[in-house]
Image 1 (tube, rainbow, N blue to C red):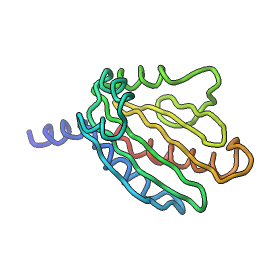
Image 2 (spheres, rainbow, N blue to C red; image 1 turned 30 degrees about the horizontal axis):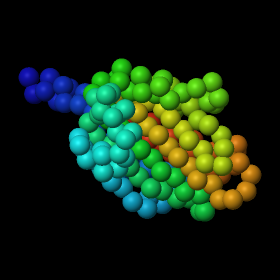
Image 3 (cartoon, rainbow, N blue to C red; image 1 turned 120 degrees about the vertical axis):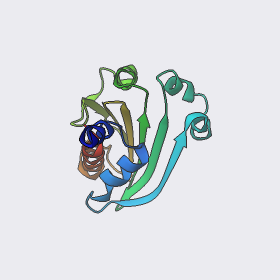
Length: 161
């Protein structure tokens, strides 16, 4: 009987904060500047009007991490929603025809520009990654796009399957 209990516990998803810590810890040359967590109504402290979109999708917890690699900075938001279908619906609401494919999660995409934004979802988790490149050519490649891919794949690998 104890073995059944252990197997049952394994399906409980980890917190977004724990997933971010685990996933980002091994990412090459990445400095974690800060992390925060928001539960329930605390989401209004992080974002005001946009919070309703997440509450409509069964928002539970948000983990946020500010990162840097050299002179490139990033912000990661990992939302835990009620059920996987909510994460899928939220992802679909943001994706558009201009998005490029991102190899992370069940489905992922990004928009190349000076500030790259990437999205992906897996299970009940929806992730947004913003990468702020130093002045220069738009983030269509180079260090900013590499950082986006490194962060997305590291966080995705830490999400319980």
